[in-house]
Length: 348
Image (cartoon, rainbow, N blue to C red; front, top):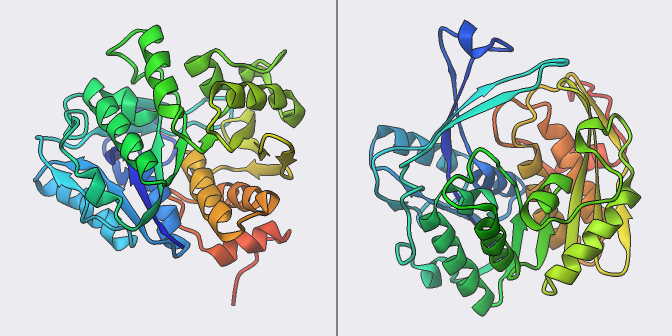
């Protein structure tokens, strides 16, 4: 498989133990993660050569983030250094009817202060076949948005497959108005061959939405057919896109979700089985694990979009059982679940 490059911010995640609220915490658990770094870790676990590109401060905390990527088998030699701090986010894990809560502390981070011209994209993309970015990166700052646009232009010129996870984050888009955000995201997404996004992403970024669907009252069953119009509208808006993918999460409670996905290739819509994910361990990174599985599936099972989609959903289903941002599972474990073995029996 050709090398994959991902670009974005890795952060320090601080969480109260278990299901404690922020106000109850006397200590915080430490995890390093972020949307694009999580995708890179998934791919490395599947044996795909992958580089993660970011900007890190040259201090002990930045070095810890670097070490986390290295120990997971992710290439780090394209990472640049500068700035004074690593971005931080605080996570309060919800349960039952109390949803999880995130507080960001990433203003003026090393990655927030990146800009065009800092990364040698020609060198980064030498020998690469795929480039992945998410909507989180341009949300960080204008400089990050400009650097991301620079990256997709070079990747496009070099003929790389370009993918995005639209990942709308209301708490991050603070430096520009809605019209400017839609303009920037539309330009960035226009370079993409593979576009992943849920119903909120499509609506918030581009005003595209399925008819008669309220994301806060979906309950257990999410109708895949309702998203066909979204996929078609996305392809009309972005003619370069060969595949538009949507994850289908039914939120019964913070501890119990249903999980499935659909893929539209311009002619046919593919749909996966629906998984019941009960007693969720950690849902953060669920979408990233789906994207990592999808990229792997589209490369490994080339020409079989159904199998690629099935792999992505099964991989993400397993991620919900793993503490932390990244999906630490193997191809064998994912394929076992794809085959219908959800018993959780001890492997001896």
